[in-house]
Amino acid sequence: MYWNMINNGCYEFTKKFHYAPDEVHMSRDTYNKLEFEMYGVQWWHLVKCNSVRGLHVRLDENVEVFKITGKDGDYLIIK
Image (cartoon, rainbow, N blue to C red):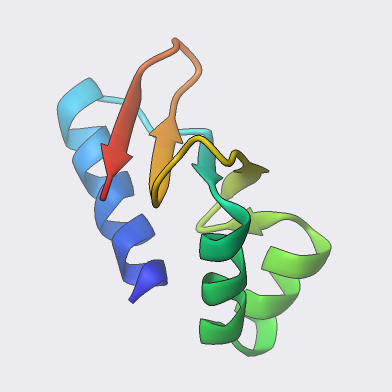
């Protein structure tokens, strides 16, 4: 569920701003739920490399679910 939300958010971000995002901001609770949803290589990249779908993961308690940001300061909030 959460992985699909990030995947769909990346698509929407790219469609809206015409370039790929760099980071995803999420709360600690959302991160834990995402971690339990993943397995294998996906889990390894999330936990060891701090990356999901090629986006750098940043923990931010001010975000409800996800906030996908790009290099130019553009962002898309996913609820």
